Amino acid sequence: MTIMREIARIAREEGEDLSTADARRACLEVFALKPIAAASGESELGYFSARAVLRGRPVVMLLSEVASHYGLALSRKVALQMMPIAGALCGASLNAAFLAHYRSLARAHFTIRRLERQHGGEVREAVESIRSNLADRVATT
Image 1 (cartoon, helix red, strand yellow):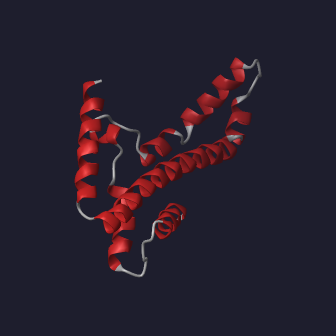
Image 2: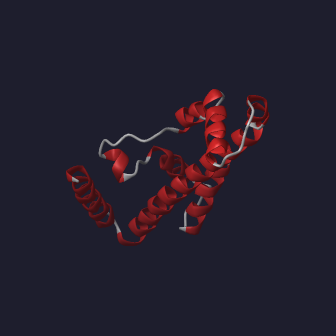
Image 3: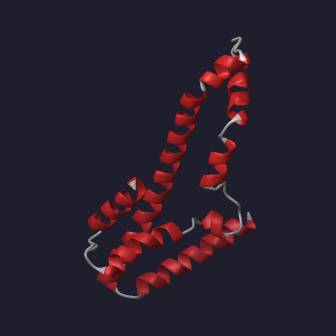
């Protein structure tokens, strides 16, 4: 819900009228956008797979490893008792990362839509040309 509110806020800042179906659809389109690196075939860690990795035993092992690195003796019981705190911290950091990601995509998406309203269809052509050139560069590196 927070991500969607942030996308809607950015849309309003860029001059979208959220009472229209087109503007609301554009807000949902942000979730379908991919950054250039992801569009060029590089895999990225998805939200649900990251949450699965951060659940349960891997987090206990991570806490124990970090504690031993700093010379702290951490029993299995203490590590398990710290699970809710570690889970909350991991979840919060994941949510913050995804919010930042979708915020930047929304800013780009609605800036392009605003420029299209002001200057017409050649803006979309220019953006698509720039995007394909950048994707080609990313693919060759």
